[in-house]
Image: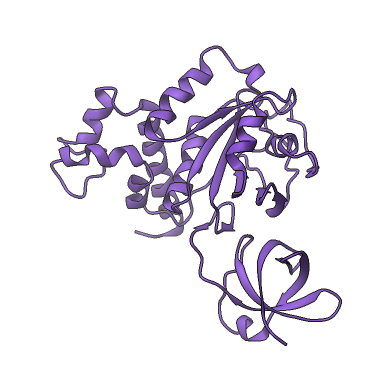
Length: 295
């Protein structure tokens, strides 16, 4: 029987659900693949051998154009870093971590601020002033009220995209507002801890307006396992412009006496919040290495 080419929509309970034209096959992995270490994620393109009653066996994973380790997705056209203006409060550090992961995976990313009607005075302007000058689009909306949704819907049309962000910021609600046919479960924010409940348990791609859209599990914090300090530098795209002013190469942009990046921060050319996030990420990477006994 001939092989079919399809898109992995989700991985659940050991089964992979693969879209092939108008059909979805429930698949297992071929034994030969299991004999070798393999990586198979939502968004992967695969070759499968169809069986009876809509079942199939995945024989091979096709080359990826990109791969996002956290949340685990492949072949994305766009990553949507989603946050709330309040309840829970916006975090520049978490936003920078998510955008850094997308940057390292070479995935275009944009920033969405939900609950715009609850935004503290000046927050939205502050976020725009930090991220828009370095090339990140910022969309503001209220999924509950339905305002600002249309602009985001148009931006995502025809793309394979994934939403990621902390629990309780309204990722599922935003996706539901963009397309009511999706009908994802939503949760409330805990008053005690100020974070949301995890309503999405695994990443899955859902058909949306000539493309696909995915919600991903939320988090309270975002750890940086597997990231090296040299990669953290590359994750902040605006640093490159000023690195020619560094005396040392490579430069960590921390303790060096002559550093173009630090000078740009002092001059207001790099947002202080971005530089503070960079330093916080370096420290987290150092502590993770120390914990794991790595140099």
